Image (cartoon, rainbow, N blue to C red; front, side):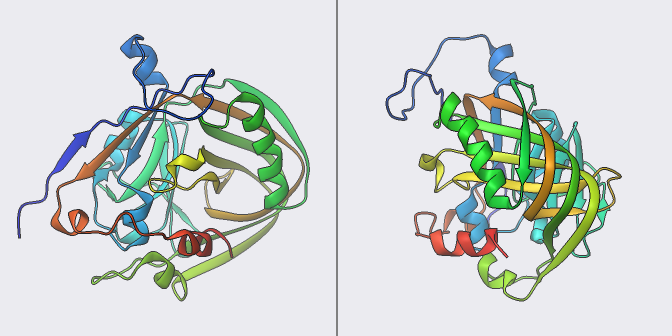
Length: 272
């Protein structure tokens, strides 16, 4: 078995407002601006879906590349929520841990958060309504950009999930979720939704559209958001124009069939 090592491969997508369709281009700008406006991703959605749960990065490295983010932990030991530069781990029972910097990450996306757009979301009666209102902002500002959002407020109710850690040999994620996830309902709770929007052309690398995680204001519970109801919520949105990914030379990752069509499996793990 050859020694596992990470390699940093840069995939830079510079997305201009004048795009008629998406493209990969280069753009001359200062590194300081690029660093503040870059989506940093660990591995791919496809590798996670196929059951590659080994660590590719660490919590410490995520902190070096962002202040807001979502993802999961090695062995898919719960959901990852990064907020204000702190990484939180929502484990199988919905409770929150603060993992050490050495804890490994098989898949995550983070970014240095800057508030580019502020808005109020009203009459949120479901996750679909939340997505619809957020997608209207995307349509207005550019559907081929990346967006991170933090949504704060008082929720009438939220439903979220987390999962039990998996043991090797790992099952594909959709299969593991058939039996190994737990669901939680909270009412009259304050908290924060962390959400990521990726354009449709990212479908082999990340979840197209919106993906949301939730954490309570007291940082005691959280997970992958499945539903939410609230009268009024405050949203801060960061538009991002650059993309960077790290991969691994690990043999299992290199042998994964990353071009497989996993649309149905992705949908299955996104909803209840």
